[in-house]
Image (cartoon, rainbow over all chains, first blue to last red; front, side, top):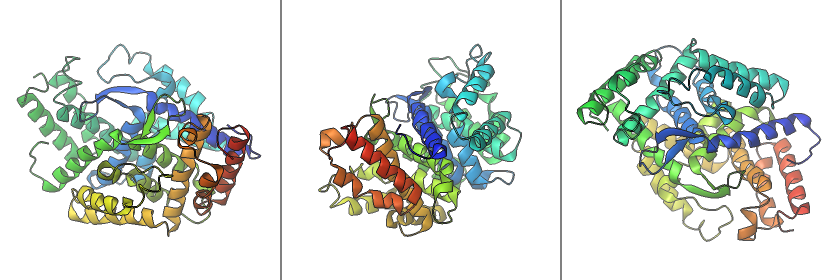
Length: 199
Length: 199
């Protein structure tokens, strides 16, 4: 990046360039047309857009711009830590430590005030205790269900994912939105009925 | 998509699934690692994230969550209309008509209130008259400069883009942020000095 006589802006631009790598972190989820695996950046775009579109279904009062901001940065740690498949139990053992280090390095590229602000926003997302983070997490859980349904279980089938495994995550949708949770349950019923998901 | 006894939510989910196709609309810009062309969805993620990170540089008062929402949906019309390269003058002749039709079809998938709201938000972005849309446009113009600089002119060189062509767009960055405009001008100077961009 070019030398520029403004170290604050230079640090922000360095971060903007660094996070471009999120476009190369692949998830297990396929695009709905099954053409390829989805990457973290486009996934983050999708759920941040969903936040605005589906804001009316949040059960508690949320600051929707803040929910979107949280979703835009929620996967940035995966630039260093990689994507851990939600049903990969072994991968989850050291996930927290890997992601904590990644957050320190990546958000640490920003000026100190923003580094603190973004690290805190990411931690809030991870903790799932506030209204904003619960609604954000609900969308992050709902979107791959839609993709799996559209692709007739493209991620579920090769990993042998069962209905019980998917249903362990449904309460996280319900924790942000009862309505979206009900939708997810209906989607799972239909996925099993159609043979996209093992009973 | 499954039948669900709530036509409002069903319409919203149909839109969420339809816009997944934005991930398959390719831009001329390469990722900063030059590995491949960028798609519209990940580009939209990048600039919406930049909106929050660089909000302090907006010259006029902006509602930054609204700027981000605008950026998340600003390219959705390209699902039908395709991406028109900024320096492709012939392609721009019928761009407006193609995009108007695309907006009618795509936002028309939403419930009527949201269809109107999102079409208006997109039109506001396109008109570049409000503080929010000018700052949004500044970021949309700045990001490909960063990518071209990082890839040593990967899009500029094959299309024979000159400094004068790039500088015709700099006022659009300045219209949203004098500071980011100054950064862009310095970046262009350096790109020419390094031979990434034709003088």
